[in-house]
Amino acid sequence: TPADIEALADGMEYSFSEHDVRAVLERMDTIPEEQRLESGVSAGLVMALIDQVKENGQRVTVPVDLLETLLITAEQALWDREWTARDRNLPVPESVMRRLADTAKVRALLKS
Image 1 (cartoon, rainbow, N blue to C red):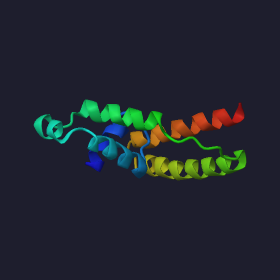
Image 2: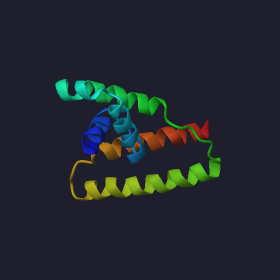
Image 3: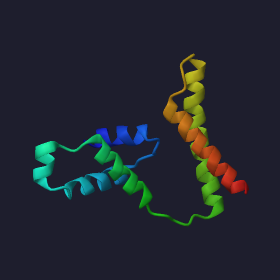
């Protein structure tokens, strides 16, 4: 299911969009029906398809000022989630921490 694909991608520390999920489902449709019905689709196979989709992802050129604006917006949204959890003495969700780490990587790339 799409939720299962998203959960596997999250466990693989990938940020996965609806488009990516659809791409994995389309690749799963290429598996012969007899094979899918006989043995099902293993988590390992789905993870391999997720890797393929991420490796074949589209690359786009983005102006630096637009990327900076998007980065600030993402950081602010993540900080809100981070500090809401901290203010309530709750652990910060790991997904938030991973995405904050991703924004830090992007910020470092912008500086170099």
